[in-house]
Length: 167
Image 1 (cartoon, helix red, strand yellow):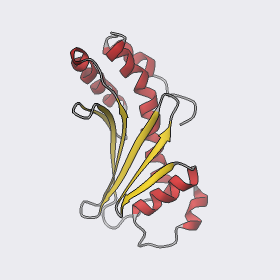
Image 2 (tube, rainbow, N blue to C red):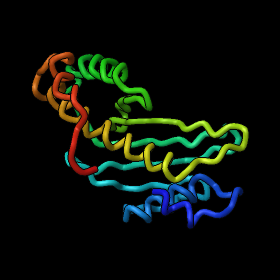
Image 3 (tube, helix red, strand yellow):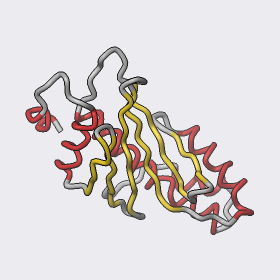
Image 4 (cartoon, rainbow, N blue to C red):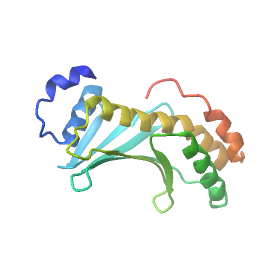
């Protein structure tokens, strides 16, 4: 990642410009949706993940949303919510949510850049990788809880160790 800094010269650079540079460096598919928003797709071991990063200059926050489709049986939703609470207790740099209307599991994180702080390519790369790693790590637990009828604590046991592999 340190090599990316040679391409970033301005103190006036927008965080989304840095995200675009990181995505290009990793050869990830992306689309600059707006001046302050970028969408990309990153292939994981379990599935492809859709990521959107948006910059709010007013709030001085770079927000990351990583989603994947999930349509659990309605009767298992209370167990899914219980599992999400347990999983969120284990992570420090983001959290899971379920958007029932869109049928999406969501990992979200906000990088606060107040006081005219600048994001580094390493920070942004770490944000993206963390989203993918946590989605990969907990995906089997979500599956076991929703379709394997496992209890949340039992399903969480499979996610206790960090996932290794490609992301």
